[in-house]
Image 1 (cartoon, rainbow, N blue to C red):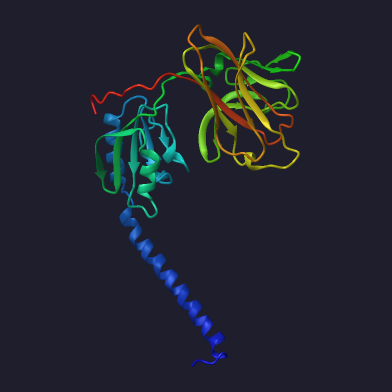
Image 2: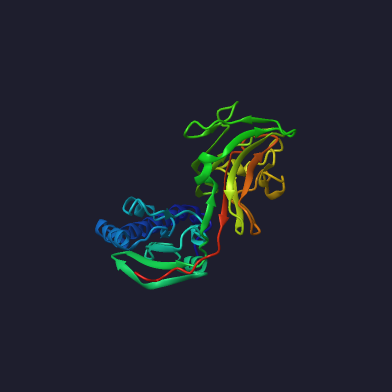
Length: 320
């Protein structure tokens, strides 16, 4: 039997053995990894397929989401999605989705991807392989045609700061942004921002502070649609929850009747894209006011968008 005194002397040998085992596992992993990665020729083959067969409105979804190198090779006219949580994204702006997969990558978790992605999606044809890349086309049953998008119509909007008594101060359009009087961050324009890891092309609308609202007024929002407001506080600012921070409010109201249509309250500490929706009855197009406010605007950087969604359509398989 080993004496208690000899145990401390043996510990360095045990630690050394553990380090050597870890080093060996890492070496094996690194030696095997190149065989699981796509070649430049693989990427070129997939890019050629997409150039020949993709349609306007199609999108590409990366699996796993962190296989970002593919973006460098894909046709620039195709939107590419790949971020934490993109597996379960509706991608509702796109009637068809091409899944570009690398299932042999370590920790790719193909079963988890399929569980999140496949609901209301139908594969069109069999998967195609180009080396370690796998390309599969799906009809997107979650597709909802956009009949109005605020971030696309922003140039024709009327933008102003509005006080509780109805007093307005205009934010003139300079050809690029609607610039408000006051601090330089008070403007309205579409920009790319990240909301809890999700890249979004949305309207920058920073709350002015106090009881004032920053308002963007849009004409011609079609009736008989689903009105949907989506937005959130960008980057890491949403996670802050100090007592001095304020709840941010953003919403939509009918400009003619002042009827509240949608409203979202986002308190400090609430992360992610927030959503609210309602059905608009049939009738004439509406003018709506999209607004945002927060008593204390510090770290309340909001980016949002408003959509009028039509009914989902059956996607034709012709030409696939």
